[in-house]
Image (tube, rainbow, N blue to C red; front, side, top):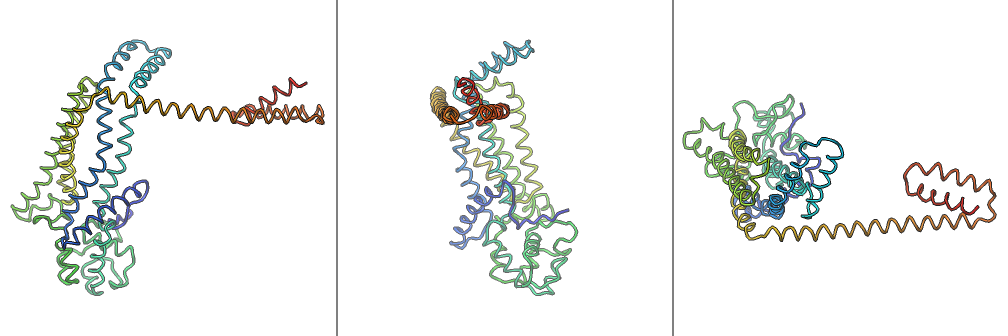
Length: 414
């Protein structure tokens, strides 16, 4: 099993999104640090607020589509009812054409909502990864842990960490990442990975580490008495007051998400989306998601739960303002704007098709001139050119189409 290094940035398609979000979080951290405040909890709240605000235009577009969809749904359902008992291919094709005509009428497409979700998904996944991997994306935080490690002697390193065989000032990059993982509570238990020795806690390391770095790290994960590096489920032995405080995060997370879902349902009901055959499934999901949010915030670290809670609260407040905004928008204005966009796209497509046809015509004329202008060409050579044109005609390429024109002109020139 591959070691999971929390202090290592994520790769793949999420890498550019996570890098940008990481820079935003780093700027927020530096802003608080400028005033002497070292607290990841406050950074997470402000970070979540900034990202959600940046995503507001996409959220509004998605809900505009839902409002528009409430108008289209009765027409689409009427078409589906019309062809309900007709299963032949011709009827199915006719149904698809009529449904497509409805979407064209309103200047949209069946993928209108999906596109917004596809854009948001990598951002949300990357946001999750950045919150999980804060030392990887916020360089000042990583430097604090590295400063602590560099201040430990070889004996102390071997006392606090397993599988450490080099002194602190000679740690490799992968060992540094593993040690940071261990100190932040995310170390993998797979064979060969660096972990804290049994009975060792972060406070034991900070007690003998650089006092400046240790003081900052100590306040880093503290959020009103909660250790953001621990999960609420692991706080049973931390005292009743701490446990009750830990329960606030998952409970509020689920409550805020439920309220946000109710506001979304209210908007859909106002728009008439309750007639949608998928409305029942959506209603179930709107109750399942808050429950899942409570569970995830219970088993994951409090820091991640804080992000989830802050995101749910911001979504709820955001939904209130979006609902007020959407009430002021006439669905006919949305239709008109969509039609204008659709017409502009159609014009651009026609322009590209016209340019393509002109290039084909120019190429065919040039090749025709070459054929008719070769008076010195023998009949055998002309026959050979025609034969090659026929061989190329089957591949569907631009050159094959030009050669087909040459073939026709060549025959007429005889």
